Length: 229
Image 1 (cartoon, rainbow, N blue to C red):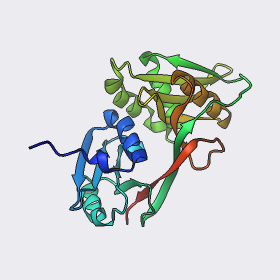
Image 2 (tube, rainbow, N blue to C red; image 1 turned 30 degrees about the vertical axis):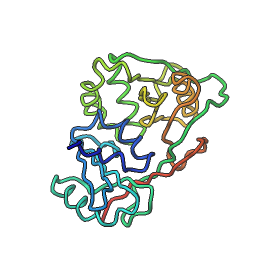
Image 3 (cartoon, rainbow, N blue to C red; image 1 turned 180 degrees about the horizontal axis):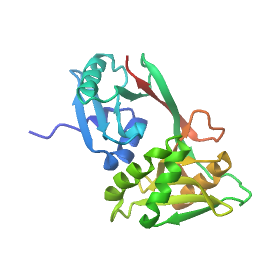
């Protein structure tokens, strides 16, 4: 008999895209399909505070699987966090606009550089601080060190203003280029950092923008992260 299709094949494309980007950095991937063949993919990464690495990615109309998803997360002593393209009852903990970013003009004040893995601690420090969780920097650096070792398809970018690091981004060579994990300490660095990622991608890049960002992406799809009650 042929092997069953992975659950991600029945996810909304934008969620399958996020799973493909983040899965190499997750500790556990769990695929479950309901009686209708709709798949749920869970990425579980204990000790790391990145939402996308600790969420269950839901198919559309996933009401039937929510109790199972919730029970599994609680069984792992983990918050029952889900990512979806549909509204889900619970506590909204963040929204993203996922789409294609094209470079925009910038005055060139912010310098963006590709950095080696030797700068991983500094990169993780900026990323953690950008999300108001500076204390997570050492854990992030340790966690990403292994998967990034010898991975030619991933590139670390950092943005600088006056020599001070103010932005960090992980570019991955997926579907022409993707940058779903990034953060800045100053919104002025957002566009230059994403411009550099687009340049790496050959013109445009798939990105996730916070729902509060003024930047524009084409073909935007909204992804919500929700804590189940």
